[in-house]
Length: 296
Image (cartoon, rainbow, N blue to C red; front, side, top):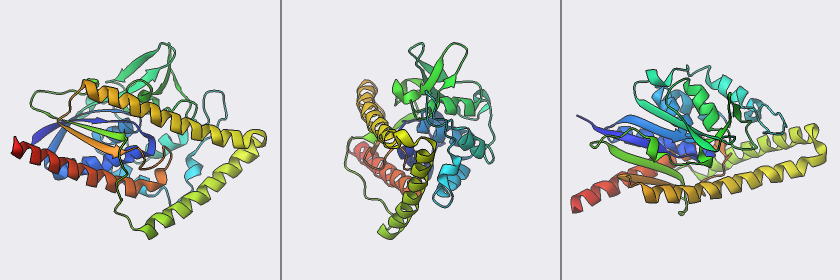
């Protein structure tokens, strides 16, 4: 019988793509994931896995440097966020069918933050995609999700490592993946030539993005770009400190740390590199865990 795993996936923007590599390594270790709790990008990757579509999601992510990434960005320039996010989710729905959380084969939970009622919202039933959409709503970047009584934003605002919501039994192996760790960056497995090619494509997309911003709102173009950068750095710092507090409270069997310096929040063009980082880091963590068990 396979060892069962309760898995917790943190938020962290594009760094959360590394969760895919971690999951692949978990399966390679012949372990069975029976429960997932995730927030923000952790909720997205965990949801794709729970729906049985992690391979399709990974394949789609790998194409993001080969098409107009920003054609998926539906700008609003409203007071609550720059991007609606509808285009991205509608595109994902073309290859991943939505389902009810309570009907999934494994236990799945996503979290969001209700900024009106100042509380954490836990999605353990209802639409998987609705749960993910609320969980990934980075404040001031993606428009929040309105409910009858509240306004939902990124779950990482209150609880970026939702260990307390994973369904765990005494026999499960509790694995926590933190993609905001304050550790040195892991050298990726992709060649320098491959990375430079991806960066070149991405910089071209950034230019298109800036041109779009300039046409839409030329008077505050520079301010908008500086604003996004500021939000990125602020959220990353906040997530790091909150994660440290959470990890002091809970004691996972295996903690897989991914450096917060691996990429910025919006570097989704680096999907292949990040998946590989997740795999390598997870493998090292499993080897260390086995070594510690032998010593004990």
